[in-house]
Image 1 (cartoon, rainbow, N blue to C red):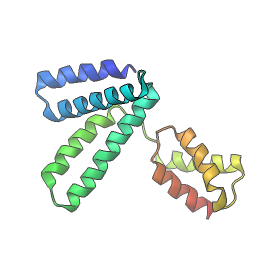
Image 2: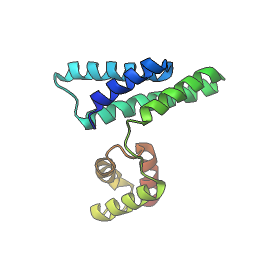
Image 3: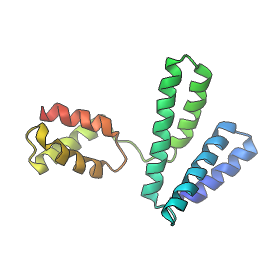
Length: 147
């Protein structure tokens, strides 16, 4: 996936359709990419792009939670629309069953027996999941199995 071209195409489409939430989100994402490329001094890889989108999506989810607590429903709706746009660029997330299977497999491979081995398991888990699973949820599953 050439994410730069896809973003540009989506930006053009949103401009023509006057789709403000998509336009705002894509512009924000392009700005984040440009800033990261300037910091790095090179173009982003697809993995780095996915991490950048995950960070943006996580920020939207946190904002949604805060706006819900503050009873700001119009802002919740706006953030949810932006989150929907961002999710188009994320890889398919693992199901709960897939995460549990992966955790059990890695625990068996590492020979982990207690909570002291959690760091070793989580390191391999995050590499194996490669952005397709929520780290907090994986940590909960590992804790449940090791304790």
